[in-house]
Image: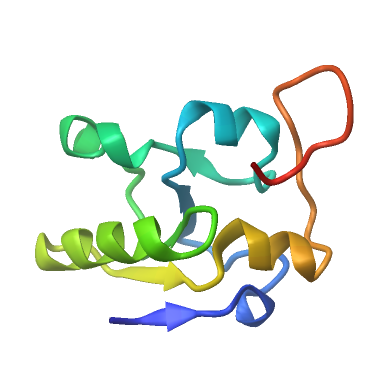
Length: 110
């Protein structure tokens, strides 16, 4: 399965690429990548039409496990998806930006 470490992703994704965050709502609200699109893994199958048209999808979760499953599913169904290994934990560890939907406090990876 194709995978990429967060440090290997360019700071600004290439034109035609999308970062798809498949974590659950509470995880997303605590902190996420600024340009990410959120579709929880638990709702993915019913929301396939909500996946933006993209040349390549980079799929991320907290640590890389759920996103690996989603990446395999998407690739088996016609998308060009790549798992973000180490997930948002890895993203945060290298100092990549996080934003939060919560108004109190700093964004964090839940």
